[in-house]
Amino acid sequence: MSYIVKVADESHSQYAESICQMMADAAKIRGTGIAKREPAYIQAKMAEGKAVIAFDVNTVVGFCYIETWEGKKYVANSGLIVHPEYRNTGLARAIKQATFDLSKQKFPTSLLFGITTSQAVMRINSDLGYKPVPFSELTQDNAFWKGCESCPNHDILLRTNRGMCLCTGMMYDLSKTLPKPLDKKKSWENFRSFMTERKERIQKKLQKFPFLKPALKNLKSNDE
Ligand SMILES: CC(C)(COP(=O)(O)OP(=O)(O)OC[C@H]1O[C@@H](n2cnc3c(N)ncnc32)[C@H](O)[C@@H]1OP(=O)(O)O)[C@@H](O)C(=O)NCCC(=O)NCCS
Image (cartoon, rainbow, N blue to C red; front, side, top):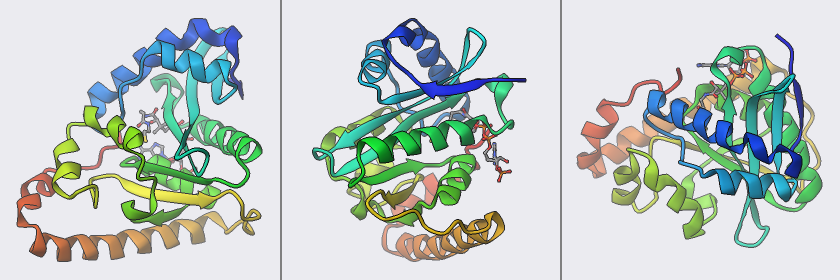
C-alpha cells in the first residue's frame, strides 16, 4: 500500500465530495466526535492552502485541514480522516505531521489545539508534543464550539457549560521551540498518567454533577 501526502490546493477541489463522504461514513460508525462538513468548506480550505491531502495514485485516501479562532490566537488541525482500507499503516501520523508543519509555518505564534475521543489521535498528538489541557484553556470562540452541535454528546457539553465532555483537549504552543523528542514509550506513559488523573478528577466532578453519570456509563472506546 503506497500513498503520498501533500499540501492541498484548488486543483484538488474535485475530491471534496469524496472527503465529506468518508467523514460522514466514519461519523456514522463512531457515533461521536466527528463534526459534519460541507464540500464547499473543504474546497475553501484547499484554495487557502490550509489543508493536507493523501493520495494513492488518483484516489484520495486521507485529509486534514487548519482552522483559526479568535483571529490567529488559536489554531486547530481538524477533520482528520483516513480511508478505512489505509488505516493502521501510519497514514494518520504522516498527515498530522504534515498539518502540524504547515500550521507552524503559517501560524508560528499561535496555540495549536484539538479535542478528540480517538485514542489514535491522542497518541499522535502526544508524540507531536501536545499536552492535555482543560477546556477552559481552549478557544472560547463560539464558532468553534458550534462544530460540536452535530455530535450526539453535545448535551453533555451544554450541561457542563463547556467545562467538560467526552473529548480530551490537547494543546501545543507553536511559538515555543520544538521540544526535545521524548522517546515514544515515555511520551505515552506521560499521557496515560494524565488520563488516570483525569479519571480521578471526573469521579470527583460526578459527585458534584450526578446527572452526568448515565452519559459516562455509556462511554465506550470510540475508536473503531
Ligand atoms: C483515527 C484515524 C485517523 C487513525 O488513522 P490511522 O491511519 O489508522 O492511524 P495510524 O496508522 O497513523 O496510527 C497512529 C497511531 O494510533 C494507533 N491507532 C490506530 N488506530 C487505533 C485505534 N483504533 N485504537 C487505538 N490506537 C490506534 C496506531 O497503533 C498508531 O500508534 P503507534 O504508532 O504508537 O503504534 C482513522 O482511524 C480514522 O480516519 N478514523 C475515523 C475518523 C476519526 O476518528 N478522526 C479523528 C477525529 S478526532
